[in-house]
Image 1 (cartoon, rainbow, N blue to C red):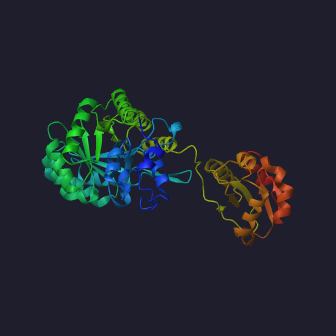
Image 2 (image 1 turned 30 degrees about the horizontal axis):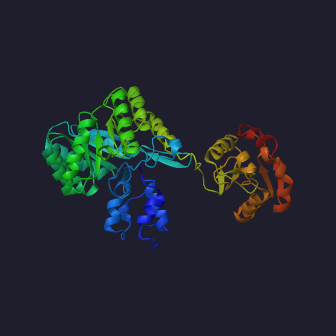
Image 3 (image 1 turned 90 degrees about the vertical axis):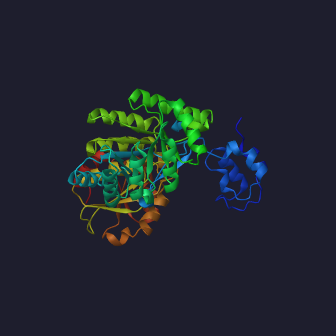
Length: 445
């Protein structure tokens, strides 16, 4: 049976020194019980306690870091099977293949295209994080040249793909400083691949023919001195990959089966773009740590990144935009001022309607802790006092030549109190955002 936070606390030094990064030993014990931290964060734990806490000291799935600097990617460290149980911590990394058989011009164009696969959606930046350099030539020299090209032209995390230790050695000589994922160690080459990964202090992918072989290989590789592992069961068809990823996740989390307690990686292995999107979406949702695609068109990638953003958003923490004054169009002293909340979906419903009206306007976004208009009003997060404070402290009074503010129609009941608190004339706007263009064109004066 897993130890509770209080069980763990009894074995800790109880000094509350905060060296672990948490304010108290009890807080550290609770985090350890939930697999959110590791025992090595406590420098003062006794050898006896360390032995007793060995099972509770590591998350069921190891956290793996690939890449360095601005391209660093963290995968793994998941603690639940389903998002409603708690949350998912590290989004599935999305990557695109580059073959070392491409011409210089093809490779440069593909890298440039991958670097541009960055999108702004509901105030969050979503992007492709990985480039997988695949050795199809069989030549260490060609592979090293391809790796060097990617290394120089992109800061994204790298996956070096070859089962030949000589080829991998050539690639690592170029890119070891970027801490790429070495893909892959299998039953035939794992001893050589372990040496290469250890020399470069790089994470290592373990490739098996089924989960049984993967579990056997991870134990061998760990015994040889490499612990930062990513696993691949070898099943790249959608059904097999889904089954293996789910089984591995369940064994790691529900049974604390350490040989499979690592993030996974899979390849779509298809040139059918529409089918590839479906396969990759399945991989993102259940339960891959990384998925590598062949296609790189924006129409393929954006839906996948959107899917990932949706599933890895903590439902307990609504997506929010910054609380401030936003200018829509070429605003003037006579532009209207509209109030809304900082819930992203609310703001990004209001903003395009204001823009489509062709009436340059200010949008005053009030901090409601990510709640929509009616929810915030019911929870006392959108009040006349808050709106009045926004009008007084945001500087909007100096940017317009009037003192009129438009509030959402759903909270018209606050208009009298807001006018009293702020000194501004309060106009009641439409209830639905779709009516904003008509309102601004016909009612606003």
